[in-house]
Image 1 (tube, rainbow, N blue to C red):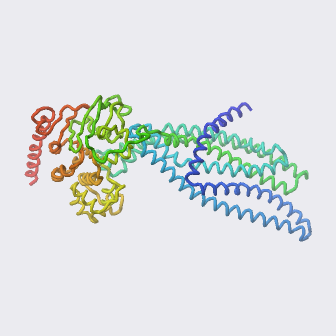
Image 2: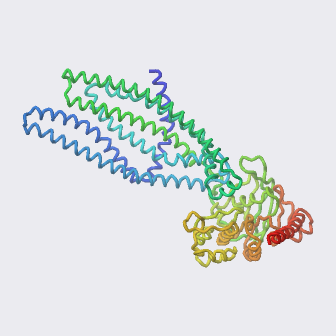
Image 3: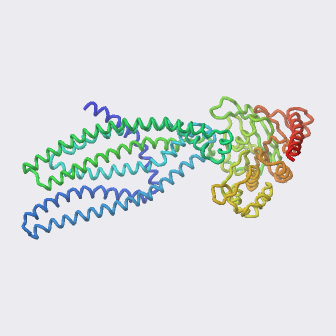
Length: 624
């Protein structure tokens, strides 16, 4: 008894600790699909009652048949038997009908709930700070929530539904067994309990193992991408890395598979021993009732009822405890979903946001900004100040790691500085709504996303809130120097881009970049942030873009991060950054006269250009 109590205490604690998850899951499910959930509950109750009714009708059929057989053809004695047989058939038919209805409701409900939970995960992911995306803990939680957590609320509903349905049937059957002996239901309960405790313990161990191996599963996904993704394949082949990634993939898979099989083996042995114990207890109960029948204490109908009741009860108890175990198992996995959904973002709107200016009149001020990336000890900026005048095109140059791209992230408020402020026309951007702040800004990144859509749709993604006309889209593409190559595509602006579509067209790196610039120009924002906007362009396309640059920036405040001095020289102001500080400021000619960092790099770049041209010329002669 002490051993049983020892195993039951953790069970009661588990129910108590996970009750909050169950409540949240039911609220989530009801919010996703109230009609289907209510229909499902009604059908479950009906399906719980019908099996118990069928067991009782079986006794009445057997007893009435015995009477009919001994009646020597009396219709009065035969008629009850016929009635009960028809009643059994009707109950069986109704059971099938309601089961079909239940399956239909479950199928519809499953899709609705899955889509609803996915939308919650997507919303949470879209709302999180960029800092979370640089944390491995966040990616572990995201992996756990999407791989298991998303499906668990529905699994919990089904397991609790099975629990309710089988409990109703079991109570009806137990009521039938009590008339023979009050201890029969208790014996059946005891016969099934060991198997349940074993499964419950295994589920807890498996959940702990599953959480602990999230990192390994993410590595497996990474190696799989390296071996199958189109973008990775050229370099993997060029450096003959396939066998290396395959070996790493198979090694991790083998380790996880071995650990999982070891757990399954222990579970199988324990369940076998529990099954033997259950069989012995059940055999004793059947022997006792058989003894009663032999000595005439019970009828054949009692025997039939007892056999069906015991057989069904043990099956119901197994299913019941299985559902109970699944309920607890699902609740363990629900922790990861709700942990993810409960994550908080520090980049939030103020209680009373200030209206953003339609156009900047003064400019952008970074005042005494101190910032380092989450989890890093190295400061990117420390008491950093910078003023970007309104309506000016500003170029920021400097070596890699000097903080140029971080500057753009801070202006977009992807991160908040540890101290200091970032101001638009003297107003701290924390006082703006995050959405309205970003409406003021258009950005092109060094590695822009290649959207799989038509050309028109890809450009229009720069501002989905505006009604994109064909003329506006073409104007944006012309400004970015993209119209000429778009005109050569099979369906021009209606051409689908990317090989995800059967007839999709692929673009070069420079063409994708010009499309990204068109997207940025399509968004009519007063602040333009460009991070290496021509890094993938050839010299002809870059030269063409140069000619348009100043006209495009008219009446806008532009910040261009670049390593190309041929772009920087066209800016109104050039800031030279080094180690998170502004070390030089001025126009192109002023910085050359200063003869500092900028002038040195300019001379080196200008000297390198003729040398590169000479090498290309010699190569052409050699080839000829």
